Image (cartoon, rainbow, N blue to C red; front, side, top):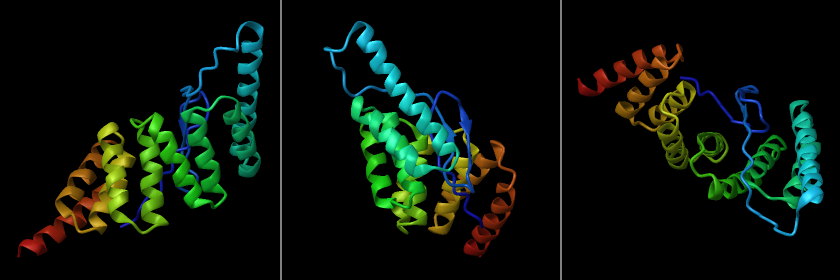
Length: 204
């Protein structure tokens, strides 16, 4: 059984799912403002927003080029001007790529406080908990949420099935593998056969 590490990397207005070695994965355009500064207006507001966008665009380019440290600095600058959940998410992505695992988790937790209904945040956290923290319970919790938010995402179902399988939750794992197969993950067929054998042996 293999475990696909799907880290979702939401960055800018394009909707792509990257998979870097199966760490970190997709780009999305959320700009969910946490701060609303009413003192900014007119031309100043336009210039202010443009400055933030420039920081984000440069950060995105840096991250795509594998320059996580430089990207992190730019995202932090943008977030200092106008914090939002997407920036926090991307800051977490940079920190993960830099090996700052605990800091990445903490930053993603903060982004969840503002956008709790985003599957990719939960996917990242689940994978980190499972692969780095060896905490299957927390991984299952986050993948369960991700699966409920994106029930037709085959990759999420596959990961969820692998963790459930590894944790001995065979019946639940089988449901997720079948969902993964139905949603385009052909490799799940092997997992389904294997788990059927396990279940048959368990009943014998």
